[in-house]
Image (cartoon, rainbow, N blue to C red; front, side, top):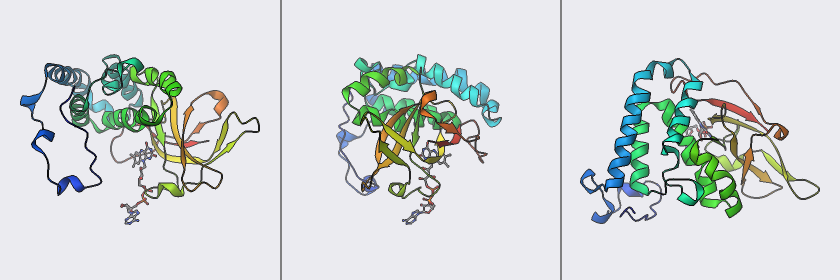
Length: 240
Ligand SMILES: Cc1cc2nc3c(=O)[nH]c(=O)nc-3n(C[C@H](O)[C@H](O)[C@H](O)COP(=O)(O)OP(=O)(O)OC[C@H]3O[C@@H](n4cnc5c(N)ncnc54)[C@H](O)[C@@H]3O)c2cc1C
């Protein structure tokens, strides 16, 4: 277990608040497990990413997806996911070490990785029901499925709660029908599951839904966006 306690600090308060010495960790503190995970992610990056840097600049989205698959096979997509949901069950320091090396290697792979492991997996891990966790986390942890997070809309960016996407309960009360448009959605081109935010009725706040990408769900994607950087990170509009 990591010795770092998860003490909640809001916003930028970490810059000015006092830090306890037991909250600080250095490489000398790494456990055998943490050192091992660090070495294996460094080896993965050296072998799979650095020699292929040019492919990222050429918008090789399929290459990013194949790297994500390999990362999943090696367990890098599921460091903090508990073992009973198919993850590695490791703590904060190991999670940070994997993110550190993946982020330092390529913006494209780090965006795909962050969208999947952070905003894709964590909403289910932190807020999902037991049934949802058992159904979706093992597929996402292994890289069998990839996740996307659909919050931003053409008229709702920073002010995300002003989104216009609607969720209406079907007459039989079993499903929600979602109608709306999302934009700048990372991993949209190869995701099997979307975390989608929509407003139910006149609710004050929007609600998060888990939406698998099945044909019957009527999801359509826009073209890949032309970006100034992170060229091989898939960014598309998603229509519900
Ligand atoms: C490459 C890329 C990938 C992305 N991936 C995803 C994704 O996977 N899922 C997703 O949902 N979204 C994604 N986004 C969207 C991203 O989250 C939004 O771009 C972001 O929330 C900002 O929204 P906006 O672009 O509409 O800018 P705006 O909200 O219009 O902001 C424009 C500027 O105004 C400033 N501003 C806004 N409001 C205020 C205020 N009240 N006071 C002072 N300044 C303010 C902002 O700081 C910013 O500088 C992605 C974006 C990019 C570029």
